[in-house]
Length: 187
Image (cartoon, rainbow, N blue to C red; front, side, top):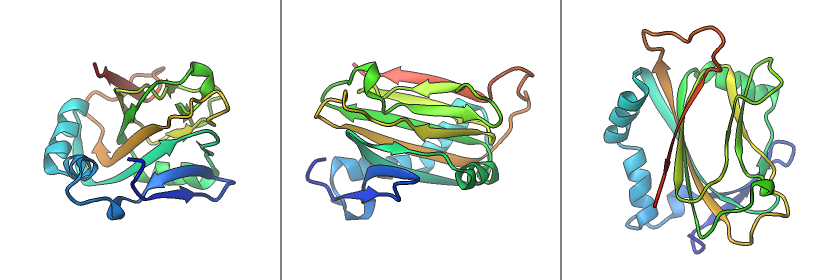
């Protein structure tokens, strides 16, 4: 992954990330095969099965990040408006790397709900794990600043969001957070 083409993404008032340029990666490499699998109909069928939801005009976003010291994203009003417009989603976070960081290093994905002060969910960057979050349209994610406690070895994050989910017949009960999480940790 170190030899791949990475691009720094800004502007600094919104984010500072290093993102893999997906079109520039080798077409026969393992990363490309993983990307193909995530973009496949089989993946869409999997999302339907694990979320219990149907799709209406499905679309997805896929990004691969290299988390290092000083990476972050900021959630602005225009981001929140876009999440509201995009509607329900299934967010997948896959974490790869050589070693985990201390909890104090940052880099966790934090989900907040509109008009609430406390986060509803935190997904720490745990190497060899995957987080699946079924996210309501009024719940928004951002990446907490990666500070000086992060190890020199980066953590790679594959972020897939599938939009167009339609609410299942059992609507959210009052008092729930609007977020469901499943986590699978590798061996």
